Image 1 (tube, rainbow, N blue to C red):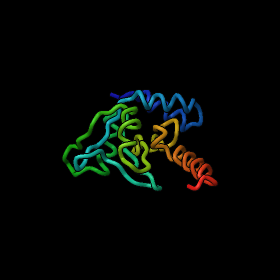
Image 2 (spheres, rainbow, N blue to C red; image 1 turned 90 degrees about the vertical axis):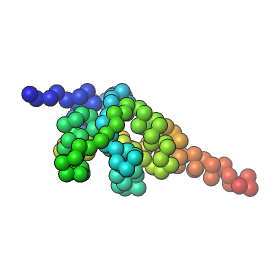
Image 3 (cartoon, helix red, strand yellow; image 1 turned 180 degrees about the vertical axis):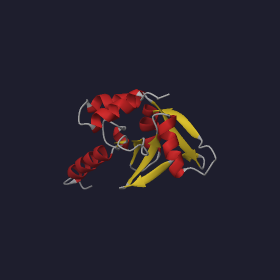
Length: 146
């Protein structure tokens, strides 16, 4: 029996083909329940390019592909089911470092990264918003004795 793709997996496929609306993709990610592996009492993440990526999966098949590469042999992989919005709005800001969401990283030609930028994560956790605030503060600070 062939499993149908989730709505988020469909939106990711559209964007990877160069079609579809990026805002619709972000909206679908926020509405989707993602399966996030749990390890060592926390959510599984990886660091790359100066960003900590929380890894989420659109369905059990995508999670299973990941578990085959990163799991502990024949033991099942524990995971939490979280809304994408909860990951980017609550988990990412709590990490106190640049962090984003990586979806379906073990799915060839099906992964998508949601970086820590304004419009995806809250402004306080967005690297582009922080840089803009710092630049404005530095500029404002000149001539004011700061």
